[in-house]
Structures are given as C-alpha cells and as structure tokens.
Length: 382
Ligand SMILES: Cc1cc2nc3c(=O)[nH]c(=O)nc-3n(C[C@H](O)[C@H](O)[C@H](O)COP(=O)(O)OP(=O)(O)OC[C@H]3O[C@@H](n4cnc5c(N)ncnc54)[C@H](O)[C@@H]3O)c2cc1C
Image 1 (tube, rainbow, N blue to C red):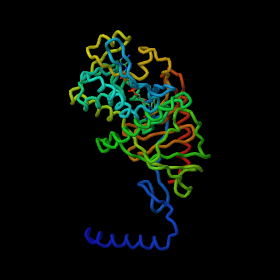
Image 2 (tube, rainbow, N blue to C red):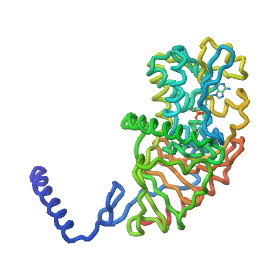
Image 3 (spheres, rainbow, N blue to C red):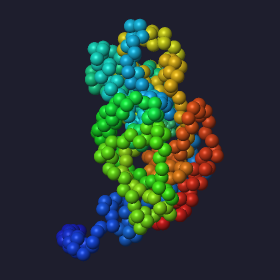
Image 4 (tube, helix red, strand yellow):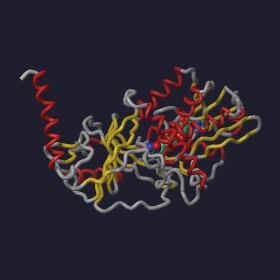
C-alpha cells in the first residue's frame, strides 16, 4: 500500500472506530490521554530513570531567600536615592520573577527617572531589568556574581508561585492580592517564552503516594492557589498508571530549563543596551556612590546585611543531579523525594531546612533520595 492509499484508508477507519466506541462504550477510561499513554498496555507508560549513585554528576545546596511576610516590594528613600526593593521570594522566585518585576517597574516609572541601577543578576533581577528596558529605561546591573554563580542557578525550575512565599500566619491579608497580581502577570509572560529554544516548556507532573498526601496549612503559603490557571490535577486509577501506589495524580505544569533561560535573558538584556558591572555592595554608602538616582534592589539573600533585614532568612535546599535522559521529560514527587527532568540533567531533591546557611551538600541526603526513587522505579510497570 502506498502512502497516499494508507492515509485514504486510515482516516475513515479511525472515524468508524470512534463511532463504534461512542455508541457502545459506557464511559471512556481516560478522558485526556497524553503522549505517555500506551494504547495497547492501557496505562500511562512513563520512561524509567537510570538511577545509581555513579550517575550523580553534581550536588548543590541553594538558599531560598524567605521572608515570613512575603517578598519585599516597596520604595524606600535613602538620602537622594530612591530604592525600589524586590527581594525575598522564598521558593517561588523563578515563578514570580516577572510579576514582582512588573510591580517594581511601576514603582520605578513613578519616579520619572530613566537611568536605573539594578542590584543583582539572578532570575528576579534579570526579569526586572528586561521589563524596565521594555519601558524605555537605561539599566545598569551592579552585581557580586553572574550566572551560574547565583542562587537562581541552584533551583528546581518549575512553576511554583506559592512555594515558601510567606508564612500565612504572618503575611498581611493584602499580600494575597499582590501575590495574585504577580502570579497572573508571570503566568502570561511565561506563555510568550514557550518554544524559544526550550527555555520554558510544559511537561507532565506526577504525584505518587501510598496515602492521600496531607499538606500542613501555613507551611509557607503553599495553599495560595488560583484555580483555572494550570490545568486541574487528575487522579489516576490503578489501571491508568504504572506505579505501586494508591494516590497517583497527574497534571501539566510549566518548567524552566535554567541555564539556557538565564543565558537567553541576559543576552537579551545586553542586546537592548544593558550593562553589567561586577561590584559587591557592602554597605549603604556603596549605593549612595552609584551615579543613578533610582536603585532597584534584587539582591535576594544578599539584601540582608546591607539593609539589616532581620526577617530575611535562608531555607536551604539540596539538589543532586543525574546525567540527563532525553526520553524522560517529566516531574515526579513522592514521600521523601522528588525529581524534575530538565535538558541539563535530572534534578533530585528539593528538601528545605529553615535558617540553614550551610551550602555543603550531604552525600547521605543524595543516597536517601536516590534510594527512594530507585525503589519506586523498580516497582513500576512497563
Ligand atoms: C533547591 C531550590 C529549588 C527551588 N526551586 C524553585 C522552583 O522550582 N521554582 C521557583 O519559582 N523557585 C524556586 N526556587 C527559589 C528561587 O530559586 C529563588 O526564589 C530565586 O532564585 C531568587 O532569585 P533572586 O534573583 O532574588 O536571587 P539570586 O539568584 O540569589 O540573585 C541575587 C543576585 O544578587 C547578587 N548579590 C547578592 N548580594 C550582593 C551584594 N552584596 N552586592 C552585589 N550583588 C549582590 C548576587 O550575586 C546575584 O546576582 C528554588 C530555590 C532552591 C534553593
């Protein structure tokens, strides 16, 4: 059969199959099959990870810049300088970067100054700098370090706008409105980044638990949610998934390929005439000495000593990186471990120790999470 004949025969055949299925099948088992759905096996066949300690190529500990009342986004007058603060995003700095950057941009534009100094070259600083450029500002970034030597480079890279963003018992009620505004703006912005060298993409996220997972309220703002922004999480029956677990759900989520994302936006910043100067800000006098009258502070945890912010505290998180597997492009979390499969590696971990400044990776932590995931993979069908 030649190719043309095949398609002529195949199309009516599949339509006929659909008509039969519609007439006699009472209710379809899978409403929205995705690319992991294996039609003859009848369940979501998910590529297994090649997990072993000798495939771990990197271990890192990053410090999430946490503030119980939420990120600091406000203007402060220091002598003749206007400081616009935009720091303290906890575990949601990637996700909120464009949204809080947009709020900071409005505060800058209200000053009518066009020459802006921006402190910090992380995910938050770079997004804020790009937005300011889009509004016609001339921006110079002053920073101690550039990627990859920044906290933002040590993140998981997924859409998690409420992750450790505040302590809901401490944050003011109006923070939720600010958070929602920032979240919606960021979400829209990320849709424009899809398809650009894969810096942002959609992928499947599985939650795999023996018992129904219980989230402690007030753990860090995680209960903030905007329904309808992401596709709803779908609970899978045991026939539909390959795991040995009772509570399995799946949803599509946004993911960020961190190294290419940072490079892309930093390159854009330079193309649009931005300048980057390596300079550590040690004290307020260093800010006073800058030529610009408006200074945007995106120094993350680095803001703590300079602005004496007692509230700002680290929540450390370890990631252990496996050699990438191009066929595995999903995220999974289970009791005691999680992973995300990015272009540059499979990142396992995501723990959080409040108040820990130590960035030395723990081999024990890696062995523990690798062990949990090895068992999960061994027990998987397929
Ligand atoms: C393990 C882990 C996983 C995470 N996963 C996610 C996730 O999946 N999704 C998500 O949205 N968020 C995640 N986060 C949170 C996110 O990484 C942070 O909120 C975000 O990186 C903060 O960005 P930032 O630009 O404010 O800070 P940074 O990336 O720390 O950038 C600060 C910048 O300021 C500069 N600087 C600091 N001090 C000075 C100084 N004194 N003088 C001059 N320059 C200075 C630094 O050199 C740097 O350039 C995660 C974090 C960790 C640790």
